Image (cartoon, rainbow, N blue to C red):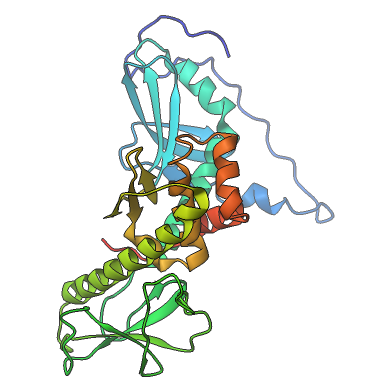
Length: 314
């Protein structure tokens, strides 16, 4: 790409005037022996529109309306998020340079926009209507909510049962079956009346899940820390929208409580990942070797963590 010209153009400059285009020739009459056009040529082109779009372009036959911002930066930046494409550029970069950069990355942009749209559709499909009989994932298993006003669960928030038999989830490292594999039918009984509001049910289930998350995460930290030769000091639960965990050099670990939706192997990967940072505070090959030493299949688990659609809580 040509080097940037130090020329400031206003964001809403009009497009350059183009030379008149000769009218296209009349289409030829096709006989019945000619094949029909390929389906790709007649399908409606993909369209992606950012809610704050102020510019638009065509990339790989896709119509893309994107948010364009200028600021104090040295290069053109492109970011694909849930809302769509955001392009940032230095104040002095002309618009045709921005367009050239977009065309150069067209394949990547359109692919990422498509992936993000599919992900959002999966997320939309996971919306839970909180009521008696709703279901949610817990340690990789489906749990059905049962409103049970005849019992009080003030100390634990609810009672997990398998075919009406209470399930006791131990917090010690010798727990024989922490992941509930093969359990036929799990129900969470919470002490709320049938007329409880959606928010009451959701908040009660979330509080129960967060208690379980703290218990399970603590057990897994105790399990992996000795194997990695590290010591963790404190566990905090987070509700971050884009981060599953973090570790600080003083031994403080933060884990997203929503990890409790995943099966234990996935939780183990995140726990091992954060504990490994207590040995290697970057993502160098040495770091990944450290993770692999305790979770050999971390790559597939990492993909599962990325691709799985979890319930929306807000």
